[in-house]
Image (cartoon, rainbow, N blue to C red; front, side, top):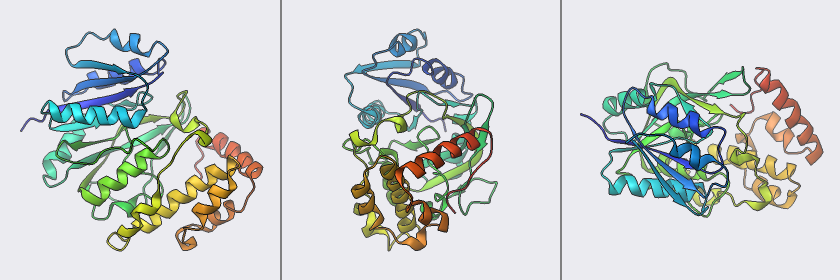
Length: 311
């Protein structure tokens, strides 16, 4: 059975990377149409994207409304135009030519699943690529995940450029969230959908790209209310720890930004048994100490040395 795929690229001021992203979509061994949502770009992103002469490429331009709005617009377009599956690709990132092909394998292998993810690696510098590690996942074969959350304590199985889903799902991105909106969406999917994972690496997450969203000042952003998912923790054994690890990560960012009151509010919701001893110690450090450690970690990571922060 053939599937109609629609890939969605939210585009905002990515003139340095958008050509590479589009080329990687058009180079797939399994065909996918491409919808670019130009979200009010003010640089040359739109003109670069418009140079691609392909019937598979469509562009919709709008005033800047944020990545969640752009993704939701894409989801609505896919459903209205009878596509079977939706894929996302961030303009910073790019795919190997077999990305859609590997997703298709899991669509066929796991007919009850509605969400499909491939593995990815992280580009730390021009010459350094880091493999992605997942907690409690030691298999080299594709599998349907029985408890999504227990595999996500180190890195996220779902990453915005690495997964796709059937248009039958009803979840949408929360457009009021401007920080960790992806995590909020992943929790929705994990609570309501069946997720299949393919360990084949087909995606490159480029952390060297300029203007990645995590570089935006935290004080200007709103983030996921993890508390609303506490009521599901009795049904999903890994969820509480998953929420606490994400609270921890956000609390560290808030401490670095000198937002100590907001950080403490998150800390008060955590069960410290869900954190490593190292993580517990880091929460006690000052803003300047964490900034120093972050700079050291960044340099070591770019040199290819990994420092594990989860379990």
